[in-house]
Picture 1: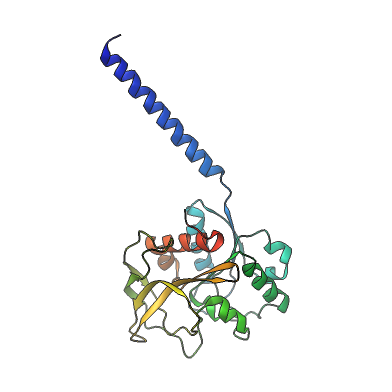
Picture 2: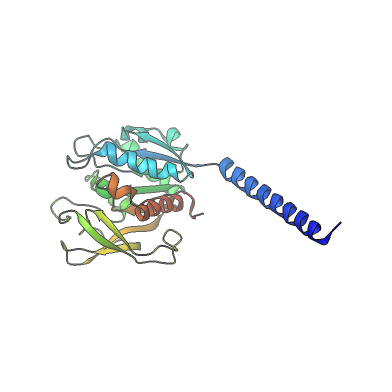
Length: 253
C-alpha cells in the first residue's frame, strides 16, 4: 500500500476518533445534572417591569445550559423547607413594594438554606426588600435604603473588573453597560468586590457585583437589571451566569 494512502487512512482514523471524543464530551455535558434555581419575583416599583426583568434573568440562565430554573411569583414558597431542599440556589430579583413581607418561618427557612451550604443571589432593587428584617441586610451584604441609596438618570457607563482572579470574573475585561448605576448601598460587612463603576450620584467608585460566604453557603449580589436590555448585555449575562454557578456550587466551569 502506498505511503500516502497510509497517511490518509491515519488522518481519517484520528479525525473519527476526535469526532467521537467531542460527541461523547457534548453528550456528557448534556447529561450533567443542572443547577436547580428558584427565581423569586412578583413585585417591584412602577418603573421596574418585574415580569420583563425576571423573564430576562431566566432566559440568561437557561441559555447557558447549566441551570434548571423555576420561577415563582409568590415569595411564600419560602414557607416550605421541603420545597427549598429541591434547589441549589435562591435568586431574588424583585422588591416587595406592595406585597407583604414574608413570614417568620420563610425567613428562618431561607437563612437555614444558605447557611447549610446552598446559594443565594440578589439583583438590582431586590436588596431593598423586607426592610424590617435585619438579618436580610446581612444576607445581602449591601442593601438599598430608600432616601439614602440612589442613582442618576440611566445612561451608558464603564464597568471595571475589580477582581480579575476570582472564578466569576476570570478572563473578563472592562465593559460598557446601559443601566441605572446604583450608589450608596448601605452596610459595611466584608465583601469581595468583583466589578465597580464610578458614580456621578455619589462621586465615588461603587461596587456593582460582589460575593461573600454566609455560613457554609455563598452569596452573589449584582446591582444590574433595570430591564431586559441591561440584563442581556453579554458581559452582564456572563457575570450573572458565573455568579449564580459560583453561589450554587462554589466553582465556575
